[in-house]
Amino acid sequence: MALPRLEPHLVMANCQGRIYDDPHLLMVCRRGGQWGLPRPDELMPLPKESEFFLLPGRQALGLDPDSGHMSAPDGDAQLAVAAFAAPGHTLSAHPVYESAPDAPLLPLFAYGAVGFSEGRFYICARRVDKDPRQEFRHVPHGSIERGARELRRAYPHNRLVRHILENCVARHDCPAARNFALGRYEAPLPTSRTCNARCVGCISAQEKDSPLKVTPQCRLTFTPTPEEVVEVMRVHATREIRTPIYSFGQGCEGDPLMNPELLVESVRLFRAEGGPGTVNCNSNASRPEAVATLAEVGLTSLRVSLNSARDTLYTLYYRPTYSLDDVRASIQEARKRHIWVSLNLLFFPGVTDTEEELEALARLVGENGVSMIQWRNLNIDPEWYLRCMAGRGNESLVMEPSMGLSRFMKRLKKLCPWLVYGYFNPYLGDRASIDAPMPGEWHMPKMSWHASGD
Ligand code: SF4
Image (tube, rainbow, N blue to C red; front, side, top):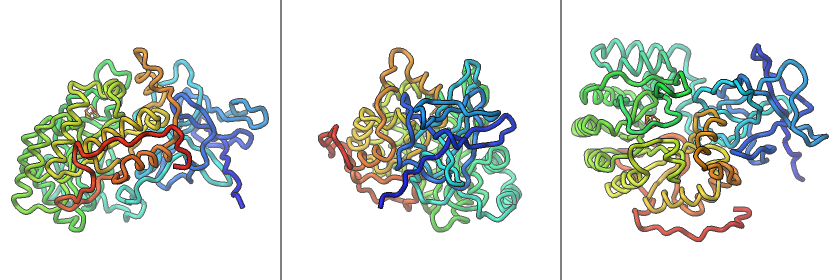
């Protein structure tokens, strides 16, 4: 017997921030230039530790099933609402609303479509990683603060320890930094004050003329020494003894490869004293020589961030001083030296999950030997991103038909069956075991436009 189709209602808020649902209007969601009802396979109960956002200057809209028209709700509660899904989840659609001409730009977070049905909230998203590393609801009250206090007391001279605990934990509630205070999972290693890209949605620095006046994080204001970096790694290794991961490239810094000597010396020193575990670098991967040198001294994995595998969209968003070819070259250098490469794919519903992106992404993955996709959400005001990407005659790039996140993931896996999917940097030991083909070994299978049921 077929299950009744889930049809969540529109949710909206009043000016005091009280959230209501409208039993007469259906939830509608947006994927790029398309509006529609959520697909049955993309609705899931709102995960624990998710958050709601009220969207100022944005009129909530739902579908009136009787008339078939889009309508605003009755009553005082008119503000559109979105949900920020807990880490480990990827959004497959944005909420639908109508923005007033003076609506303020939304801060750099991810805005998921959310509705209400039979006593619970639903979101258009998919859990892509079961790892609980950024869940904190079971952490005993006060233990993060206690861990931070003890570390500050034990390493008063180390500026990097202080930065992670006083800036990242205390001011920004950064999950990686909180885990460092708890001595578990992945330790953050911010090192760089500069970058060679100018991402539209950079979360640590914006230029003076940017319409964004605040960023969720602040750029690092000093450069640590290799000794300070190694001390953080050593501290973490002695506390997380099962699956220690150490990651360069954090939200509070520029790109770590801007300072390759520091990274190389830190990793070299750490490995020379027998430092165990996965040393990872999150980066825009613009510097192949730096990647090669780092790989030689003991790097385990490289996570390459991108919003698109297509040059036009990549360049419009990253505004880089390098090219996507440099990124490809970095991946190849890493693979030649047995480094696990993940893509940190900044997924944007309706722009990423298209036929054109699928082909470009499969080529980037297959031709260069990428092992994993981390399905991340692009944190940005959805309408602003579409405007930025559609500028200078590129409207068609954001108006392509969306196939939906689930189908996109399935079809990519069919083209590149070795791919591992997730959200977080995996623990790989000191040296990863890799199934992905070597650069040049893979050839694009024939693509089908009639891929039903795949
Ligand atoms: S690559 Fe990272 S640090 Fe550099 S501008 Fe983009 S988001 Fe900011």
